[in-house]
Image (cartoon, rainbow, N blue to C red; front, side, top):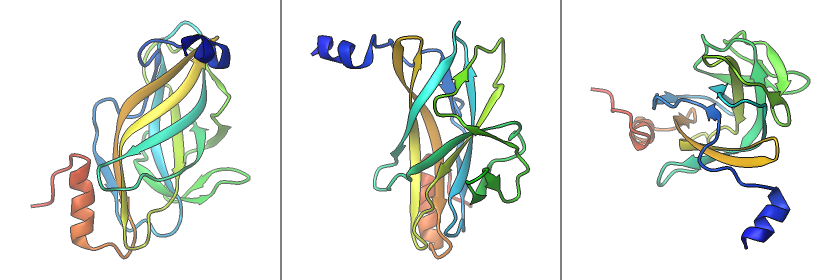
Length: 186
């Protein structure tokens, strides 16, 4: 079995590898009344390794009892430090976010991310499918599959985020936020 995996994917890296994705500090966030448009989830990227990392896929793990959104696209952005989440106005020809002036730098899939000397120098926007108008989705983990040279990694990081549709009840909003570790409002 290990020989088959080696032949199919090359050497498997141990642990998460050198790429950090998302909010490792466990930041809990939610979006209400997102409407039918996709949601832009802002994440930071940091490569602490000696060689470039190349992302091949991103998978989201939902909170218990909640669906996870579908990842529509993963784009690089020049500055999203002032953005938390934003409705996505369009993806093609360029990613455009409402209420957020980040500049789209194109798809991150297959793009080499070089080593950084310090900090979260790379910013990403994961474009996620909208929740049902009367429902919510919730994310507890982000799984990023990537390679560095011939080594392949599957890094799992906390990604505590939920979103609810415009017709979701206040109880549904509070329950979704609590499912990712958020405290309900007083």
